[in-house]
Length: 464
Image (cartoon, rainbow, N blue to C red; front, side, top):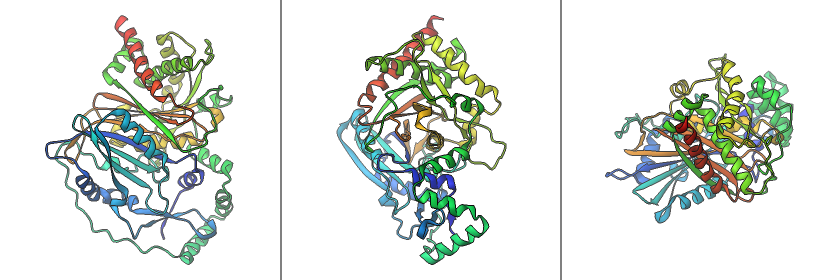
């Protein structure tokens, strides 16, 4: 019997619409080695590693009448070159051109008739660089234990590890009668599933969102915060198209650690405080009314320990009010640290080094789990999602090419204008800002303000 999508995974298929693509992405920049790093090498590398991610050769098939959740089946027409694609910028390609390309690619929905992922090799970048852009549907990512294609293509040395490439023979695709028979068998064992599936198939979004919410759960402090609606913000608008804008910001991990050492808290607190300062300046640049009590509520999904070691959902939703009305950067940091301390003291939090040991290097997976948690909340409960995923502080390679930077692309929740992903890697901290094209025409301005906010905090650390 084919694997049936979990209720949570299926919900992301049902929630997807023409304005809200449900895929998570990443932008990795590589320094091309003397031996080269081209499309053929990338295809060969991915073909060698596909056995590590069998889901990437499977597609979603719906049950007739949608009396049960869809199933994963092998794609008999699987063609790796359909999923691994090639693009190029006019030489010498710059960051702005790359970010425009990322925005266009992320705006396009994935082909639901095939396995739900794509990879683009981007050539033509200046300074002997190449970029790899990944897109993976959130329905494919069901926990920290899941591997993502961008993760398995990386090695810890320039010499790729040897993988035994198993001969893959797709299982026959089940026909309509078999799909219905299997569904009936499942319904007999779980009769309540029939009603739930019919409601989801009818696009009962409220029921679907509640299902996601119940699957994740939230920390007690998040529940208390969620008792009141999020403050009004230009970040909560009606999204009318899938078109996006993308921008990035960079920082040094040692700088964030120096700020933490000077003022206390955690590196994650420093990240949120820097974003608070940037969002404050962004609001002011738009002429918004900012008073001493103005806040922006961030959904900050955090990795937690789970009592069930077999559980894959190790990310909980945490809501924190960012003090954008506070003009003093140190006071902003103290406000954030105080708000986040309750999570740390709960005993559930997972330290960054422990998370890296557990998950390896899986930013797309963890950012996707964060985005899944965000989708469980009403847009009235938060203004912006911020996912912060630590990575290893050693260089990684793909087919001998050294990865120099990696930026997450976190999908927007329903009627959310901005999503921010943060990843640390090899001494750097990389911010990816994904915004609605109409509502966030100045997302690049906000990205610049993030870097300026980090510099402002660094100035206070040097002075202390």
